[in-house]
Image (cartoon, rainbow, N blue to C red):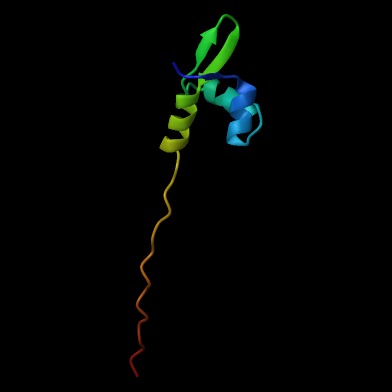
Amino acid sequence: MDRLLTVDQVAELLGTTVRFPRRLIEERRITFVKVGRHVRIPESAVASFVAVNTIEPVTIRPVARLRRAA
């Protein structure tokens, strides 16, 4: 069983304000669990959200310098 985190814990883990995870929940962009009136987010859902939204750096090849014709 996955550990369930509070919205505050998720915000701290992501380094954001509480408003951001609440917006993710409202927009249904992250998996969450309702326990009565409480909302919890599984740790695996946070890890998955980060993995899906991680952008890898682009490796740029050096541009060959063009020489001017005389």
